[in-house]
Image (cartoon, rainbow, N blue to C red; front, side):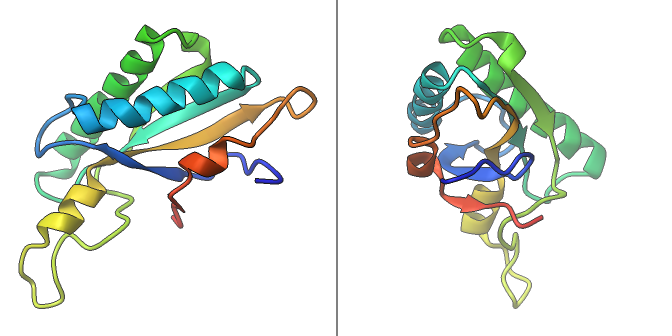
Length: 146
């Protein structure tokens, strides 16, 4: 990346959650470990972890669940040595899907639901005078177009 786009979500593959769960899965821990290393190598960056749900359940419940997911990921990162002042958690519920929760014929789309139960990152502060950004490209999967 040649430049930082503040407040633009970057979906990091494999930070997903089980249905109705905020527990960090083993596959998610591996990706969060990469994020920990990235943050340790780039102390000038502050990020938001935004977590999401599929569309099962009511809006209020999903907002709470997504907030718990974001907080769980933040807690994991802080427990691995990142300063808590450099990271914040935000739950978005089902408001920002990246794929359909149902198929065109109205049937369930389990793969789509799984992709929507995710955490993404946004850089909300970056000191460009001391920054380096080589490694974030490796973590980038696809931007959140919302």
